Length: 323
Ligand code: IPM
Ligand code: MN
Image 1 (spheres, helix red, strand yellow):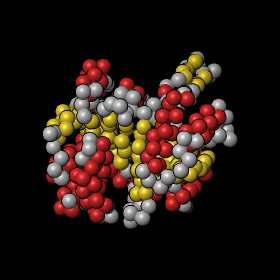
Image 2: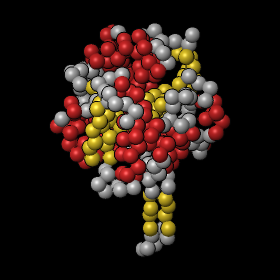
Image 3: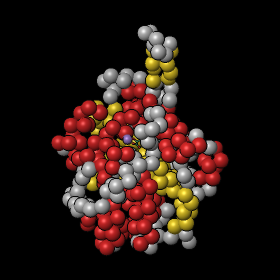
Image 4: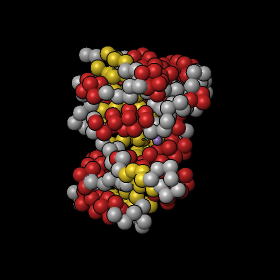
């Protein structure tokens, strides 16, 4: 039976990598019934639409969403990021951002579990006396017990299927409120998983370990902003962000799959973007839809060609040959 997939190519290199992703998934045998959603900066410039509620309602009936990248330089910062991507994550309650990283030689794999609906991303704050010499900007961080606990629980469940090791990353020495809640929630969940070994790192130290000693990690759980930054670093230390894939998960609803990289307007339209992260994100989508064998075939094929170079289409061709 075909899976019903909503496709948001988005902006810049997004549509280029997503169409190659779909081509590879289909070549691997996936049956995909796709519905295109013309959304992103380009669409906004054309008619002012960012994301309407009807579209969100329609998405609830899909099996999954496959997204390229959104954001364009001609649109003011935040309009598309907050109005489309974050709105999607929040409205569909995609509370886990699951981002795996594999050393290019396959020697080590670790996963960052990023809380995906709260923190500084929640949008708390505002501007006072804007454009005056006395202007004030605040940007709060929203951390609920429920929100951090469900991310932490997901990390422990994941750890049980892996090396049984979870590291909490935060900045408890400075953020003494959210940094009080998170470790308490972590310890409470950890007590339910006596077989799982735990560790804690401050986020700045974690940046050093990502570069110098990533082997110490298996599953990492962290908040939204730390997770955003750490996962770009994770991409950079494990073969480049061109390989970094992600799943935005609502374990009880529709989930969304997207590469970690952005829309890269500087190289858009040239056909040179690396499609491997989009292809790997597509494999995560298939795995999530119960097609674990096809997903594993695609992932293995990507690993075979990960060190090679080529245009967007050539790279996808190489993956298809390697299937
Ligand atoms: C990501 C992106 C987004 C984020 C942006 C585009 C809003 O950087 O998925 O990592 O910060 O979450
Ligand atoms: Mn990011």
